[in-house]
Length: 188
Length: 426
Ligand SMILES: Cc1cc2nc3c(=O)[nH]c(=O)nc-3n(C[C@H](O)[C@H](O)[C@H](O)COP(=O)(O)O)c2cc1C
Ligand code: SF4
Ligand code: FES
Image 1 (cartoon, each protein chain N blue to C red):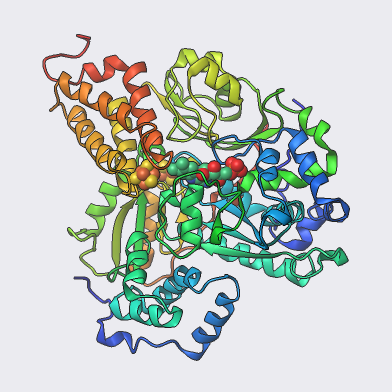
Image 2: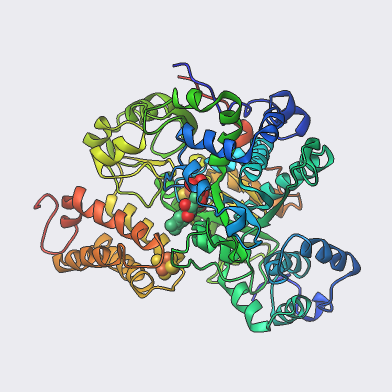
C-alpha cells in the first residue's frame, strides 16, 4: 500500500524488550485493574511497531490477561491506533468548521496537488500520508495540521510548501512553535 | 476593566510551565492553607463561591462535590478524581493553553480537590492528539513529585495523593464523563446511562468526580481569596472569570479571560478585534459546536454569562468556544460541516444517534449541493426532534441542537437551496 514502510517481516518479533517490560510494570502500578493499561500499552506498541496488527493485540492480551477480542475492540474503537502503515510524515489536517471558515479546504487541495496524493492518502514519493481529521482544539490558529506529533498552526500554502520542501530535502520537521507560546494578552 | 486573571495570569511569563517559575508566580502557595483546612470546609468554600463547571454543562462544582457519599456509606471504596482534558468540542481550545502554559496550576487545583474529596488517586485524561502536551504534563508531575507536592504525606500534611496522565486515542465522545470513565477502565469509550452518576458510582464502580481542566485550575484562587472575592467578579448567578475561545471570522482569534457577564459584542469587537473590514456579522455559535446558533440581533442582546445566553437567545454558554461567522459564510455548508463531525463521532450505541446523525448529514449534503426538496427539510427537522433527549448521552442532543437552531433561525437560507425555489424566493 505505501512505499518505504516496513513490511510485517521487517518489524521484528512482537515481544516486549526488557525496557518495555519494566515500563509495563510501572504502568500497572497506576491502575487498580490490569485492563486499564490497555490504552497505554497500545500506545507503547504503536511507538515500537508503528501500527497495531493482530500479533500486537495478542501480545497485549497475553500481557494483561485479556481476551484478544477485547483488545481488538478497544484498538478498533479509537481512530489514533493505526491499523496499517502510514508514511514517514503523517499530515493530519483539520477540516472542522472553524478551520473550514478560514481556508482548510483550500489548504487540503493544495497539499493533495503538491504531494500527488493517491486514494489512500499517500504521496507519490512515499514520504507523506495525508488525512483529514476533525477538530484538534486549535481553532483559534486555523487552519492547522498535526504533522506526526506536533501542531503546525496558522498555515498557508506558502508555509506548508516550505515544510514539504524542507522534508523532501532531508531536513527534519521544523520545531513547532505552539501558538500558545506566542500568546500575549491583547488587552483592549 | 479591572479583574484578576485567575487562569491566564502566568501565560506570558517565559517557562511558566516549569516548577520554579510557577512557584515564583504563586502556584502551590495556596497548598499549606488548603492542606490545613478540614475537607468539608474546602468543599464549602467552593460551593459558596458559586463556581460552575467549565466543561460545558455549567453544573455547580461545590454541589457536585457534595454528592460523593460519606466514608461510612462507601463500603471501603476509594474516591477518584478525574480531570477532563479531552477538549474535543469544535470551537474550544482553552484547556490546551492551560495545560501547556500552566500545568502546575492544574496540579495544585487537583491536590486541593483531592484533599476536599478524600481522594488518593487521580488521573488527567487527555486526548491522544495532545500527546506532546501529555509529555509536558508528565514532566510537571515529575517535578511536583520530586518537590514533595505529590505522593505520600504532601508537605508533611498527612495528605497522600498520586496523580497520573492517561492518554486517549482519538474519540470525541470520550469527553463525555461516563465515556471517559469507560475509556480509563480500558473499555471502548462508550457512555453509560445516568443514574448512577459518577459521583456515586464511577470509575471501577467507586465514587468519581470528573471536572474540566479550567474548573480545577480555578480552585486555588478561590481558596486563597475566599468565596466572597470570587462572587464579586462576574454576575450573581455566573460568578468569576471564564476563558473564552474565539475562532472564525474575527481579526484576533484566541483565548480571552474575561469576567462573566461582559457584553458579547465587547468580546467579539474589542477582545477578538472585531470582524474583517467591510464584513457584516451573520451568525455566532457561542459555546462550542453543540449549542444553538445565534443571530446578530441576539448577539446584541446577550452578555457572556449562562443566564443571558439562555434567556435572550435560547442557546448556551457551554464550553465558551465561540465561532464567529460573517456574511461571506454559507450557513448550509457550515451546518453540513458540523453534521459530518457528529456523524463521524457518534459512538454508535443508540439507534437514533447512530442512524440519525448519518442521515441528517446526508440530507444536508444534498441541500448544500442543490439536490434536495422541501420535504427533505421536513425530514431533517423531524430527525433532529427525534434524536434530542432520546439517547443514552447528551451527544444526541448536541447533534440535534445545531440542526434545529439553524433551520429555525436561518430558515430562508435553507429554503433558497431546495429545488423549486430560486434564490430569494423564500
Ligand atoms: C458529547 C459530550 C462531549 C463532552 N466533551 C467534553 C470535553 O471535551 N471536555 C470537558 O471538560 N467536558 C466535556 N463534556 C462534559 C462532561 O461530560 C462533564 O460534564 C464535564 O467534564 C464535567 O466537568 P465540569 O463540571 O468541571 O464542567 C462533554 C459532554 C458531552 C455530552
Ligand atoms: S447518544 Fe450517540 S454518542 Fe451518546 S451513547 Fe448514544 S450513540 Fe453514543
Ligand atoms: S476546527 Fe480545526 S482545530 Fe478546531
